[in-house]
Image (cartoon, rainbow, N blue to C red; front, side, top):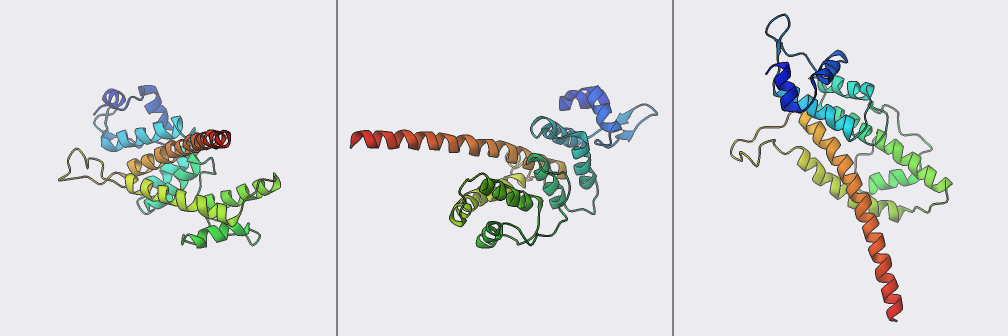
Length: 224
């Protein structure tokens, strides 16, 4: 498809597509003439990923560039791109986490990881959890091993379902006989969408649960 057709199919303006090309976020199309290029599904997938990163995760251009640099390197496994994408969605630095686990890490982090059988390795989210626990303790918010494990079990189960959904073939429902494996861009786009959407869902469901349980407790007290 030509540039105008790519814009129509993706819902992204021609000006934005040109901007993404200049910024190195979108690979060039196949050259037809000196001024015309042919674009395909890979470009649609990339524009879909960029749109989710910009609109849902509020990602900066440098953050997106860091991510697509990994995506466009066939020698890098998609799990590296997923780590960066998840960092962006969580408001963490858009880079692979290279620091070792610090000696003074909050002990609850290791208890959680080992208690749930997760790989005992360093990562951006692990470092963020360490900072969060320190912040909670400094603010006087109680947090125990039992609390951390309770959250970890529930959220780990949700994360497992999210990963399964991300890796589901693109047209599994439309064409169950011959599903296509999703592209790397689609896998990462699903990861970002899932993380942002389910984070919001978890927040509002938890708020609803607290409100509902509080009302139920009041009714029980009044009925005594």
